[in-house]
Amino acid sequence: HLLQKNFSTLLFLQRDGTVINEENWKSFSDELNETLELPSISVPARHVHWLLSDKHSPVKPYLATRMLELDGVHPKIKVVRDCEQLNEEPCVDKKPQRRKRILLDSHLASGENNIKEHNSSSVGSEGVLLELMQQLPGMPEHILQRLVDDFGVTPGKAERIDVLYQNQPITRILSKVLPPDAQPPPSSYEQIGHVAHLNLRQPHVPHGKLIGRVMIDRLQPSIRTVVNKVGEVGGPYRTYQMDLLAGDDDYFVHVVEHGVSLFFDLRNVYWCTRLEGERTYTIDNEFKPNQLIADAFCGVGALCIRAATAKGCRVLANDLNPDAVAHCKDSASRNGIDISENNGKFQVQCGDASQFIMNLGIDGVSNLPDHLLLNFPLDSASFLNSLRWWPSGESIESPPRVHMYTFARGDEERTPAEVAIDMVAEGLLPEGGYVEPSKFRGEYLDQLGCNVQAREVRDAAPGKLVICVSFSVTRLLLRRMQGDFKA
Image (cartoon, rainbow, N blue to C red; front, side):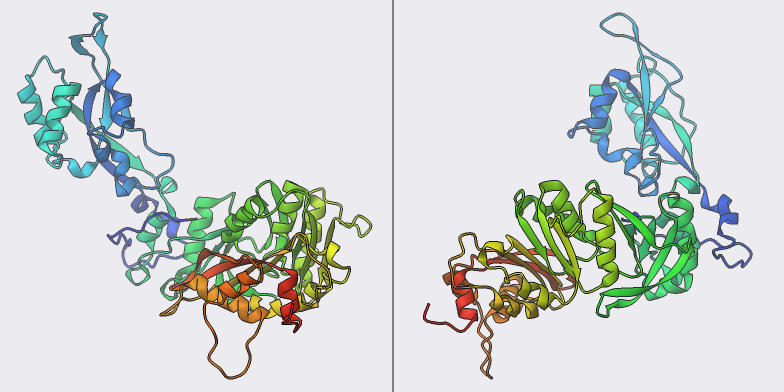
């Protein structure tokens, strides 16, 4: 979630040297509230819809809603207001034509607010244009001329708008309460159930509780807990420490993703909301109904449960983290999936990924999965060697498709995708020795029928991408991995 745009002007509040903190910030409500004087033009009502909606409208770039000061304000202000009088000029039906006022960007105005509404019959078009130019010096003359000639626009009365702090975006509030050394304020957060997860930069850390308290005030009841990530993702379970900034000391979350309910303790598992789109892509474009899906790093089971509910896929899932496995089973059951061992359609185990991959081939070619997911970007390639234990004595009519995720950086010769493909090749068929590693090995894998494809998933850091490399596990590939180079 974006916290809205940052503002170039520091609005840090000061009152008699009082230090603003999480306890007293709401006492500054008078300073947090804002009042804007918005100029307006008077327009025959029949032209209002076109002027507001058509891409060729001459007035759209100058509407009040385009102002930075109103960006993110909720609810949005209404730019169309009633006029105090009717236009005396008759319409086709011989009845007076109602007029409306359209509110414009305050930066266009001259500051003269003693405008009186009038109809175009009392002042000639040249006089109307002159008044508009005086009222709106920031608006091009040719635009004003067209508004007068084509739409019968006249000057309108200015409108005073009160923008309470409760209606302002969080970044706008933080721009006022944080000191200059903490500007610009945080710009985004990740929502995980009722928890807002921040990754504060060092200048923001001393003011974390103030930031958290403002977020709770503006985002409740959907957000009840605000935390800051401490350190990096690490350890065998890819978890991280977090500091409670504001709200409830409650980390057991309920996340709904495409109609599937997931329940887990955020402190004990790895979760990334940004992977939702990737999960959707995989389910929609890779999986087919009733296929067998194996996930070696299933986490809390978002992909597996969605695949089972959306396409009726059978699932074999694994994770090293016992908490993640427990949450996966619990969420699957809550979504109406039979997780009993007798059913066999949704099995989750806790263990080493290498052993899990090896065991997939125990029962022969006919029981190999249709897809194997290896979503552990830090070290997925090191698990590819476990595929060599799969049976290769008989032909594989529908070779399993592996989807391996990895971090990759491009170099002088290769794109990040090409680097990732070479990592897959090295994991499958390590060259060994002290020779310089070969490059562009994707063509060799394709000669083995692997049909290698790579695509960018997301940015992980400047110049560092997450790449998904997909390939087919053919009989010829397995024979090469098992040392048979004659096949």
